[in-house]
Amino acid sequence: MAVALELRNVSVRREGKYILRSVDLVIEQGENVAVIGPNGSGKTTLIKLLRGDIRPYYDEDDPAVMRIFGQDRWNIFDIRGRMGVVSMDLQNRFRPETTAFEVICSGFFNSLDVFRDSVLTVDMAMAAHDSAVMMGVDHVLERPIENLSLGEMRRVLIARAMVTRPDLLVLDEPMTGLDIVMKSKFRSMFDILIENGVSIVMVTHDLSDIPESVRRVVMVREGEIFCDGDKESLLTDG
Image (cartoon, rainbow, N blue to C red):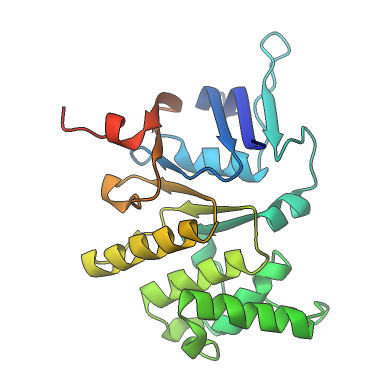
């Protein structure tokens, strides 16, 4: 099976401090993985690495290997086209008056809006509508996002991430702020996406967020991976 993401001996340093240290992680294409750990454990930095937003710390005496979709070198825009990302940070960066339709369409351009110099084709508009239907938010397409509920906004962002039909969907704390009922609906929704061939990497600090279909769990603590294996064997009461 082809490898989607490969990190070997990868570290990230900021202001002389290790945020991630000697991380080894391989995620194959088609695999579904939950990355869990407390706040401040390095999960967000790991996501930035996986997206190609940051590079690992370079030490010529202790070299690191990082490949995204099999490539040692990559174009950041190509990577973002193949990897859809949903995060709280992204949610807070859109202008309140932006419509849900514009948010979804912005996924084609890796932007926070559809600007005048962006050419939105008929096929793109149809794909955006189809993505909204898939996520159950086609009825809010013309609404400004300031008028959406938290659950609706989160689904709009997932529709945005899915509009280019990426090889991998990365969910960064997708359940944050949702109530118990809505969390259950989101878990079921993610299970349906997986059943339909969507590959998911979910980052969370809450074990109850993990969908049933996600079998592999990677545990991060203080910038290091300390467990990686089957969910049932790792998440036991003992």
